Amino acid sequence: MTFSPELESKFAKLLESYPAGRTRSAVIPMLLFAQDELGHISNDLIEEVARRCKVTPLQVDEVVGYYSMLHRKPMGKYHVQVCTNISCLLRGGEELLEHASKTLGLGHKEVAADGQFSLEEVECIGACSWAPAIQVNYDFHHFVTEEKLDGLIAELRKAQ
Image: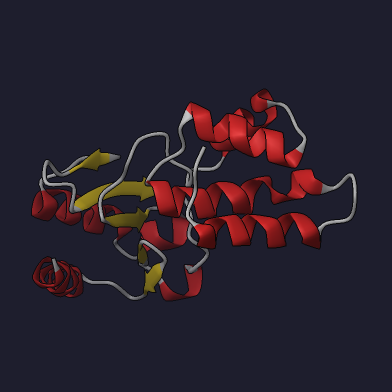
């Protein structure tokens, strides 16, 4: 596979940062960095990461299957993740997810036809003290209300 020079540099630094025989520890960060560049995790990418980290493709595939932040199909330019774990659930997370679904016209793990938005219900984003919380790509938003979500979506639509 061919990656950008920037990604190749990140991969090299990652592999250098682990002691000999421990390169398998680079699997998750390599997958995340590559997903950011390529948009999703393909079978070719799984094989390439396995080769570089000296593990089997099956081991990498198992990692992809386990972690919900790794996607086998492209997500939207703005990937909206709504937490519905217990803290967020008790503070309106489920209603927020329903509102996001209606506002975006998307269901769980669906991508808008224009590729701008995708929506995902997530189990926990580690923001229990600030519930309900959402994440858009790598940006966290806390104490989210339906009005706050509407404003955020409107801003993102303007930025397109």
